[in-house]
Amino acid sequence: MKFIHAGLNTIAMILAIVSMVAVFDFHNAKNIPNMYSLHSWIGLTAVIFYSLQLFLGFAVFLLPFAPVRLRVALMPIHVYSGLTIFATVIATALMGITEKLIFALTNPAYSESPPEATLVNCLGLLLVIFGSLILWMASRPHWKRPAAENAKILRPIGATPEGTEVESTMTNSSNADKSDLRSNTEAARKQNIKHDEAGLRSTM
Image (cartoon, rainbow, N blue to C red; front, side, top):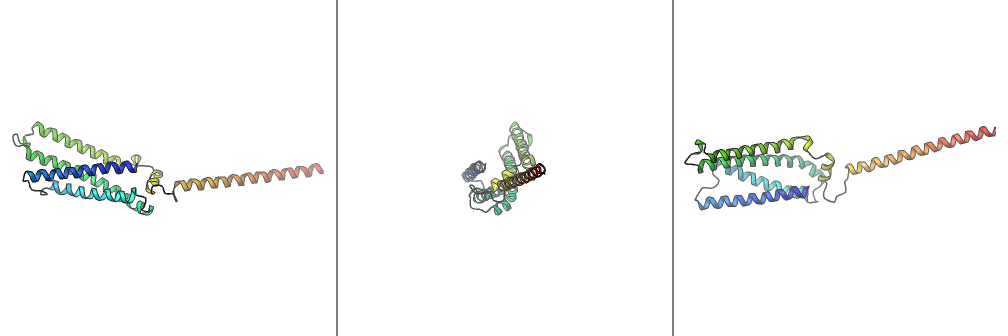
């Protein structure tokens, strides 16, 4: 699961870098100023924080070097920042398509609601619905990974589960074996007492 998560996010990061290079090349070719709109500011901020999120995710959760305490401490921050970046990307996309429609549609204008504007507005609504569903799923307890699986993920790959469910299971099994041994010993002692009492009665 960690490798799939890291791989998909790496692909998304590569696509984000390619798209940013394409945007800057297009602006430079058309003599359009760079980084003047709120869309560009928030978009670049989202890409920077996304790259930091990806780097820290690799260093802390994927590579087997970070201690478990650090992983446990950073996991809530990692989850929150991931959802925040996701919502920021949705907002950036909505601002980008609106900005493009305003600049591109001149005859008829965007304000006259031509078919292109209606189509792109519907795509924007689908983006909002998609983002809302993802955020809702991420906040529901029954969609979250069970605590036992989280304990496995927080451990470094190949590490021995110390103080986790496996150790608890081993302890419980050991306690059960000791309890069975005590029960068997107690039953055998009582059985010997009965035999001794029966032997005394027969002798008398």
